[in-house]
Image: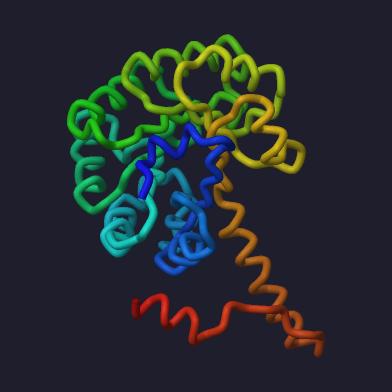
Length: 254
């Protein structure tokens, strides 16, 4: 199995599908994806809690433990690290690493507001000091939240996190091709982007992006498909396809 870090330097960007439970992660791995991420939205929603509410910390640890035998690397979305104190964040990530996580994604916002970049850099540095083998993908939420959403502010934050030890930079919500190109040119680490209707995998590859995440889209699409099934039964329409029950049972038993 290739190391998670190595997967960011292949001939094409690493497509990281984001799972929300054991079965979805196993399905992505069986479909041939070389790594799997988690979506904090999907994990939090399964707890009946909103994303970004610091509710999914223990669920993440349990999920990582349940996936300890996943045949591909696992990266866990940890929101803001579930704490303000860098030491507490580092302790938490060490627990994930012990459970088998190869990487984490940590955002520089709390309760939908950007935090001081120095505070986020301190979290990144503490994580790398405690768990140097963990791939830290530092998320910059300027464009995601529409706060300080300029190229200069975004790159200043990203560069600070790289100096703190970040292994990658995630720029969700950034769809400006010129800014994305400037980021991939300026940053010495792989840049991660979120898939969007107007920027496909080939587009992002052409802009120098090295990692592409699906975010919560698979989870939301699965809910959409579930509604389609119920509607088809109600309306007497042809039933949509589904993964056979015996196949999923065999995966879980294995």
